[in-house]
Every structure is written in structure tokens, then in C-alpha cells.
Image (cartoon, rainbow, N blue to C red):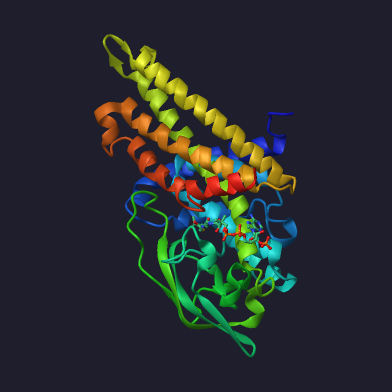
Length: 376
Ligand code: CAA
């Protein structure tokens, strides 16, 4: 067992850390005001960060899945908003085409996605089908060389800015999950209607919208895999997507702890730094220990995924534990800061608001428990 990163992984970590601290930090304020970080994403594309685990033959960096997870982690320590944009773009916006696309589909879309010239989104959730994803109502009807698609999706991350949407609709409603198919839809397709941005508790710089399909016609060649394979495509990509979100949650907790430790060392009460007083020292110790446990779960799931092994259970465990830890650690970080922590002058309230959704998207904690228990 080796707990060290490889030289390549460590180089990636340092490069992304420097990029996040120097290039992302100055934009946090504008993202908090709701601005989508296009300029930063452009730079991330130039650095190869939008296609880290994508094979070189399709324009990606061709690095292992662990390097990608490390990058999400380092970015999320500084900006959870960019962490989720990157994770959704790669894990569920690009990878479905890499793993299930035809060669033609891969050639057409993946190089642009991997270079960050296009942004990906994943449209599964609907108003009446969140956790019960297989009960989705969107329908796709084949008409000659086209599919006509009607339906509506909600809470679509990257949805207002994406160029490529992986969408799920039923081609055979009687067959339930086995009637669901996946499709690639391009921005600008007539009948693809993008709703307004949701106002959210956190992740203010990320775009979350409703996406509606009104008699949207797409070429039959844009089906991903075969008819009826859509649900499995969604689930298989969510396995790795959940490791990405777990890594984002880990980053949020680490970012909040870093600030809390520094503040506790600087803040003097009763004649000494609060870090040296047991009430705060023990709190920091607890936070750090849970973060370390999250890290081991995230890396273990990422290791299995890197080796191409089954990782569904481990991905769910990592997401379940790391997201809970992110929420708990950020609550405690606000507590360490006291009254200052409740103001927007300090970053911990932002981490606290950004943490909560990691227990919700890409499968709630309750769904992760279902996946884990089914696997026992
Ligand atoms: N990989 C491959 N296939 C899988 C799979 C996986 N991980 N999980 C299930 N399947 C297959 C099953 O094998 C089964 O096929 P067979 O009958 O041929 O064996 C089929 O899919 C149906 O499986 P289940 O009966 O287990 O399906 P279910 O209806 O009970 O649902 C569930 C399972 C785990 C609860 C699933 O519905 C689920 O994950 N729900 C949560 C949805 C979710 O995570 N949504 C996130 C939206 S995306 C998002 O949030 C992105 C963002 O914007 C941030």
C-alpha cells in the first residue's frame, strides 16, 4: 500500500493549487455576485484541466482518474463553484461520450470538450423524478432519421452555459428503466429551451437552470449507445461523478479548516490564541480527523476507478462521508470565527453555504445509503 502520489500526480496537484490560489481567488467576489466564470474556464482549458482523464487521442491530457480527482479537490479548496463546474463537465458531461459514444461522436465532440472549447451538462433530473431517476417522463419518438423529444429537466448544472447536453428520455415508457435512452444535444437546437438561473443558497457562480425540450428534433445518429441503454449509461457515469463530488466536498472541508486554523492561531481571547484553548483545539482536531477519513475514502474510490474496477459502493461511501464532513466542518469553522464567521467579510460562511448541496446533488445521502446497502 502506497499513500504517496506519483510524481505526475504531485505535479498536477501543485500546478492546480498555484492556479487556484493565484488565478481563481481574485474572481471569488464576482462569482459570489452570480457571474459565471468564463474567463477562468478558458484558462483552465488552456492548461488542459477541462480534459484531465480524457485519452490523448481525443484531445485530453490522458492522465489517470486520480489526477482528475486531485485537481477537483485543489480547485474546490479555493472555489467549490469551479469544482462542481469541472466535475459535471468531465464526469457526466464528457465521459458518457468517451465511454459510450461511437467513434464519430467521439471525434466530433470530445476534443472540443476536453480543450474547454465546449462545456458539457447532464440532464437527468425532472420535476417529478429526482431520486427515482428511472421514473422520468421525457419522451423521445423516432421519426425517420430523427428523434422528436419532449419533456423538461430541472436543476441542470452548467445548463445555462453548456454547448453539449447529455440528455435522458424514454423511447419505450412501458419498459421503465430499460426504456430510457441517452442522447447528445447541441446548444442552439430548435426546441431546446433554457430557463432562467435558479437563485441558490451557495455555488453562486455556477449555472443551474431548467431545460425544456419542445418538439426538439435531433438526428437519430445522436443517440448514445443503443435504445434502452440510457439508464445504465447514467448510472455508470454517476459512479465516477460521485467521486468527483466527494472530492469537491473534501476540498470544501479542507478550505474551511485551513481558514479556521489560521484564525484560531491569530485570535487571542483570555490572554492566549483560541487555538491553544481546549474548546477550540479539540474542535479543530475533530474536524481534521474527519477530513483525513474523507480523504482516504475519496482516494480509495478514485484508485479503484483509475484501475477500471467496480467502484459504485466505494464512490457512494466516499460521497456520503465526505459531504457530511463538509457540512459539519464548515458549521464548526463558522463557530471558530464566532460573530465574524457569520459575516460575509470572512470566507467560512461561503464554504458553509456551498457545502450543503454536496449532500444533495448526484444522489442524495439517502440514495448513497441505498446504493451501499444494496451492495452489502
Ligand atoms: N452502473 C451500471 N448499471 C447500473 C448501476 C450502475 N452503477 N446501477 C444500477 N444499474 C442498472 C441495474 O443493474 C439495473 O439493470 P438490470 O436490471 O439489467 O440489472 C438497472 O440499472 C436498474 O437498476 P435499479 O433497479 O437498481 O434501479 P432503481 O430504479 O432502483 O434506482 C438508484 C437505483 C440508485 C436509486 C438510482 O435511481 C439513483 O441513483 N438515483 C439517484 C439519481 C441521481 O443521482 N441523480 C443525480 C442527478 S445528476 C446531478 O445531480 C448532476 C448535477 O447537476 C450536479
